[in-house]
Length: 365
Image 1: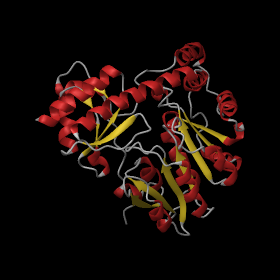
Image 2: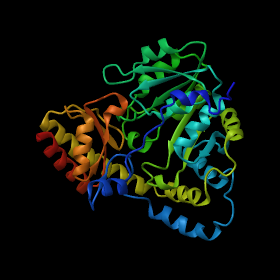
Image 3: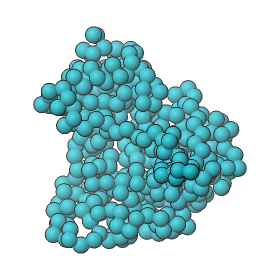
C-alpha cells in the first residue's frame, strides 16, 4: 500500500488568494502607473515615527529579536489598559489566525463562520481537520439566529469579523451583547478587529475589551497592517484571557516577529495623530465613492473599514479585468460568491477620483 505523502485535508483545501501584485499587472497590461486598491492598505503610508524606529534598529539586525516582544507588549498593555500577560504578538494577523487554529483545533472539531467573510478562517481550521459550518448573511448582515442554530456540542471556535471583510459593515454592541448572552460559554469567540481604528469612531461599535471579564473564552485580533500602515513588516496582536494567552504562547514560533517589525509597531503606536489622519482620509475617500454610487444607483454596504463593497450590476470578473486595463486593481466579488459585487479599498483623493472615473467608463461600456 502506497504511503499517503500529504495531509488528507489538502485534497479539498482552497488556499486564500491575495490581490494581484502591482508589478505583475504592469507587465501583463503594459502599464507604467497602477493604483492598487485591492488589499486594504493605508495609502497615507507609515508614521514617520515607525520609519525612524526601523532606522534605529537596523544596526542590531545581526541579533535575534526579543522572542516575547516584551517592550511592544508593555507599550500595548499601557495603551489598551490590559496586562502584558493578556497579549500574544504575531507576524501579522494571518499568523495569529493560524496560531488560534493550532492552539484549539482537534480533528473533527466544528467551526462557525459567516459568508461572505475572511477566507483565512476556513483555511486555517480546515487544514487541521475542523468541520467548517458556514452561515450566509441575512438582510446584508450577520445571521445570529443562524449562528446559534449552527452551534452544537462539537463547536470549538466561532469567528466574527467586525468590521466584516469584504462587506465593511459592523456588528453593533447591542447585537453582539445579545448574541453572546445566548452562546454557550465553552465556545471560543474570535473577534477579528483588524479594522478597529476605522470602526471605533462609530458610537455603536462594541467595546470588545469588556468581554475579557464577562466571557474569558474571547480572543480579540487587531493589527498594525491597516490604520498604522506597516503591512509590509507584518505585526498583529491578540488580546485575550491570561490562560488562553499562555497556551497560545506555547504554540507560537520562537522568533516569530522580527526586530524591525517590533520597533516599527512601537513607533506607530506612539503616533496616534498619524492614525487620526489616516481615519480622516479614509472617510473622505468613502464619502466621495458613496456620492458617486448614489448618483449611479449602485447598491453598497455601509462601511466602517478602509474599503467598500459595491454591486456594479455586471459580473465582477469582467469589471475587475476592465479596471486593471485602466490601471486600477480592485477585488472581484466572485471570490466570495457575490458575482456582481466588487470590493475597493479607500485611497488618497487622487486615487479615489481615478477609480471613480475609471469605473464610470467601465459601467458605460
